Image (cartoon, rainbow, N blue to C red; front, top):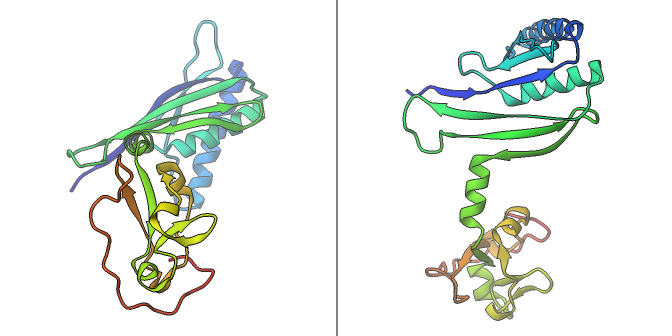
Length: 218
């Protein structure tokens, strides 16, 4: 059985030695709150003053059992309490005791301490998938609609079910944000389009059509 880890190590300037002490107390309170909710604080905090920043605290995972969301909540709480300003961010990594596919990666996040907003975040797995899929194009195809409908079995965002030449071509990002339309038997699915504009592979053979389910998605 594999063991999974989330590791990170980052530093926050709370502004003063007193604030650092208060931040440690807030962490202790956070730990108690998590215990009352039958959970644990999936990070640790230690005072870590520097010569020009006596209010520094070191935030890190505890033996690989880290949770970036816990860190974000804690840092934003400190920022609000101590009136911190500016941008702050950290990164994390995913590790595994065995070489399991998709078990490795990581991410990063940047916060606006003054507003409490997440300015941006990055997850390596999502980025990798997006970069690989970026050049692909897709259509929506329904074998049942192709067999039963008069106009065709390809989907147009403007005109519904149409023939191949009138269908909408979707990018990978558009595919992720668009649901499949209702179709006979709810058999509509995505098909990839090759560089020449033709469907990759063979389309599914039509199956016995069920009554249309209007206004629903599969």
